[in-house]
Image (cartoon, rainbow, N blue to C red; front, side, top):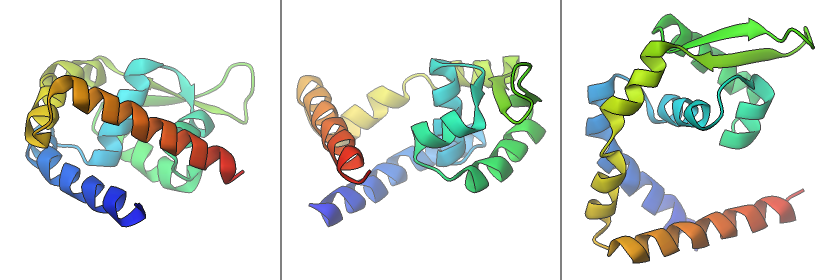
Length: 135
C-alpha cells in the first residue's frame, strides 16, 4: 500500500508538471498557495501543519514566494513570535491561471469523476487516520 501511494504521487506529479511550469511554481509552492486560497492570513506554523512540512522547509519556500510577489509575510499583531502569510493580488490571480487543473488530473486518472472523488475521500480518510495513529 505504501509504495502504491508513493508511486501514485510521483505519477500525479508528472501530470502536474507542465501546468506548474507554465505557472512558474513548484508543487510545494502551489499547494502552499492553494492552502492560502482556502484560508488566507495563516501562520507559518499553521501552514506547516496543514501541508505536512517542517517550518524550516516552509521559511525558504515562503521567502521565494514573497520574492515572486505571490505572498507577503508579516509579524502577527497579537503575537510577535508568529508570522502570518497572506496572498497578494498576484497570488490570488494564480488561481484563475490554475483553473482546470482538477479536471486535467481527473481526466488523466482514467476514473469516472464520481469514482475519483470517492477515492480522494478514502485516501484523505486513510491519511487522517495514519496521522492520528502517529501522534
